[in-house]
Image (cartoon, rainbow, N blue to C red; front, side):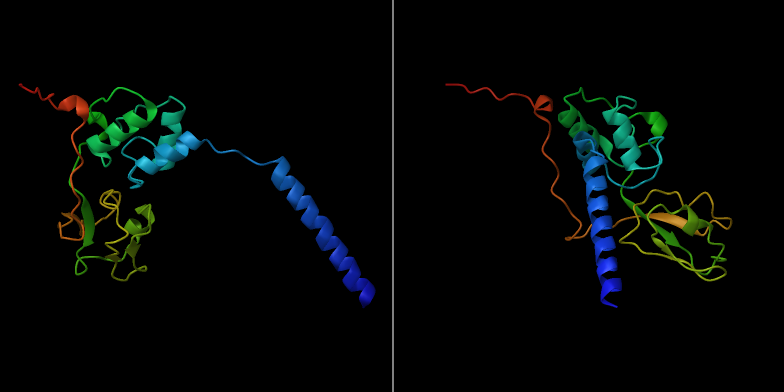
Length: 188
């Protein structure tokens, strides 16, 4: 019995050392600029930029494969932040990718829902709750407003409703970019 325990401990130690060496030897370094770009993006995972999510779009921007103006949910503020980070010129939002819309959340008409689960499969952030042939509902706090659940719904029971601004959701508007303001002159 003691010999068996000693052999298991020796094997565990050997495998632990092997895993530790492999973790150091084969470590994959991430690109810190991709992380910074990804933090600026709104994380809606909507695909309007032409990429399957915000992280692939951030990687494409960092590699010079995509412009900074392809994210409608990020809006002008997102383009400005990306331009500041990457020291690029601010360019207007690319109309081919969509338009800036107010923040919205999906709402399912539960009396019309047939429980097909197509919206659940389409939701990139798992904000829709339900089961096959059962009523579905949206977890409003999780919904990013990407509208990817609208096209697959066969009975059109999903609508997008703007998020009502409350004291909790209201945010102070960002100051204007210095280039957009006119300099003030002092008269003596």
